[in-house]
Length: 181
Image 1 (cartoon, rainbow, N blue to C red):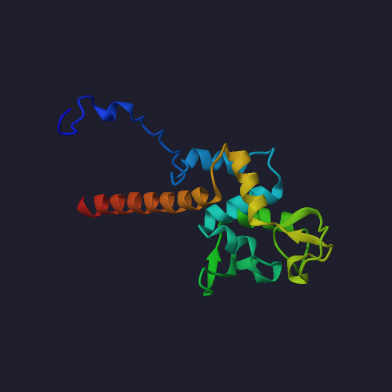
Image 2: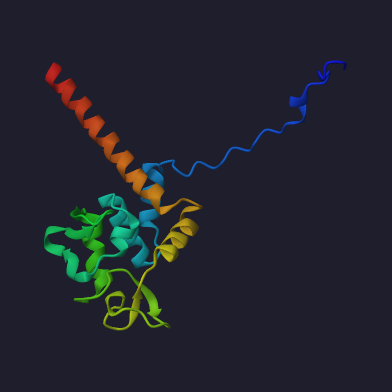
């Protein structure tokens, strides 16, 4: 070892890193459908998750919805997007069937509220007429993660966008086959 060269292989002491769980992975259509139809999940969660999936909107946008923002007959609502732009989200039959049951005739306040009255002072905009608070992102995320075996609300959105792309590509391939024959 006159020149400072090592005789042993220094890389033999390195340990391989464990692969991180893939949090960006889209849930399969079957996984999503099983989550959205589970009877042991509360009506609030099933409605929230179905709306998130059917609209592919961000969780914060949907959790910020007030009853006054909803246009139930036309299955749409105004949301404030990231950056402040106002946009329209449109939902499908599943959400349209669940929303009236969730609202139970409420005409104002947050769409998604906690099970019990708020224990701390909150702005009036975050309370429904009975004093229940707007459901927080943290609580919604924890409930989804627990029910889905560790998936995230972002994965649900990613799944909706992925499945929409698959459906569109399948339809385009079918249209191309029809046009060729």
